[in-house]
Image (tube, rainbow, N blue to C red):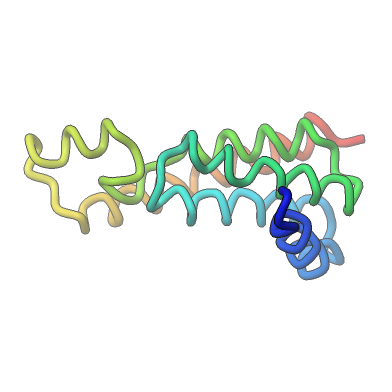
Length: 127
C-alpha cells in the first residue's frame, strides 16, 4: 500500500479488463487470486490482494462486496497444488498423490468454482 504497488497493479488490471465490464473484472480478480494461491496460503492471498482489489473497485465502480467475496472464494479454492493449502499437503504423502494429481483434478474443480462464484457475485451484488 505504502509503496504504491497496489495502486499500480490495480490501475494496470482495470485498464486492461474494465472495457469488458464488471463481470470481466471479477473474472480477473478470481484468476489472479487462484494463480497467487497456487504458491502461497489462502490467508496470504487475501492479505496481499485486498489493497489491490479495493483500488480496483474505486477505479472501476465495481461494488466492493462482489469483488471481496470473489477474492475470498478464489483464495479458498486452493485445489491445484499440494502446497496451496495445508490439508492438501497433509494428504498428499499419505494418499500417495503426485503433484500432477492435484493439477489434473484441482484445475477443473477450480474452473467449476469460478463458473459458479463469479456470476453469483456479479448478480447478487450488482448495483
